[in-house]
Length: 238
Length: 213
Image (cartoon, rainbow over the protein chains, first blue to last red):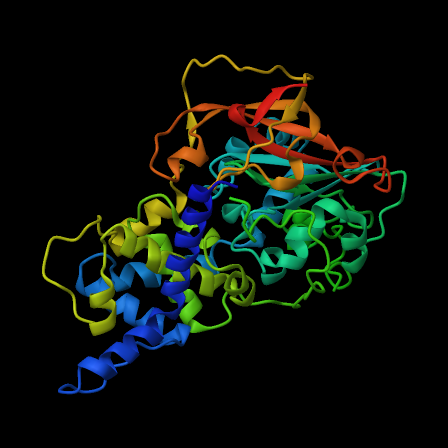
């Protein structure tokens, strides 16, 4: 490593460190130089920091509170794994749709009304008795929002991101999924601008069910590849 | 950069903590920081700001704490806000550096397809089925080339088309559009003979990451 690189890294890390500790530094500075005023300490608690940031951005005309409320409402109540489950159920009952989903996923998903940020370029992979697919983002936490919503904490965790590529079978065992040795395992690392959805195998037992009923058999995890789809009462492994 | 965020293949990073019936957000402030991040008109570079967090802090923080810190740093770095304003809580008068997203515009933005794919007639450097090697690159800035793949040999499985190059776009060093491919690496090529012969990892890679094998 050259001196220049080292200097750069030091500067970058110092700058980032300063950001993290700046609350404390500023508070100290105030104490030293600002005795004439009320004691103002920039809060370090994330809740207070977000509140301060939001107020400032509203005052500066950079965010609108009603817009923030609408975004939260959408991701809490409208954009979630039920969307992906409907896509999967449709593919299970409609072979022509399944074909479109596997060849042009973005357009096929949009047929059901799902599109938007983090779903602009979708790919769907089909699990079969011979091939199992598993999705991860080792560098970040990339995830197909329009069909699965925001990712769970475990998907964003160091434990999952590190292990999915080097020990996927052991990881799946921790999810309660024992993959037979004969099954080919494909791990998809979402490093670029493509986002992935797994089309789980249609489980036996739901032969007489409607498409809507079948959608309840599709868990979020089965569309990431950490579980199989199955009857809702027993289908979601811990 | 070879940062703590590049986690693929690291070991002993703790047990998997699975929460049943997990809520979308775990605290009201998480809702707000996500919504600000989503709605604010910020320039590229958010991920890089998260990647240069001090490693110990990166590991300690939750996802939304990292979002809060990286977003704040990005906004300060681009002059959208200042540290003085954050400290005082009072905005300095002036024209906002960024477009305001209104509540009326949110429904459209939620379903908008703002694809990164570029319809440019660029010839691909590699063909499907071709053997390629991931270059041994160690940039000190943002990259999407994970460490575990560098120097390893794989096969081009699919050509996704032409995309802006995130390595340069994120640093505001140009869009540098080029082909992105799905490259299949056998698990044994990445991790040695102990790995299952039936396992593989597929990595999406820009032209600039690859050379003929």
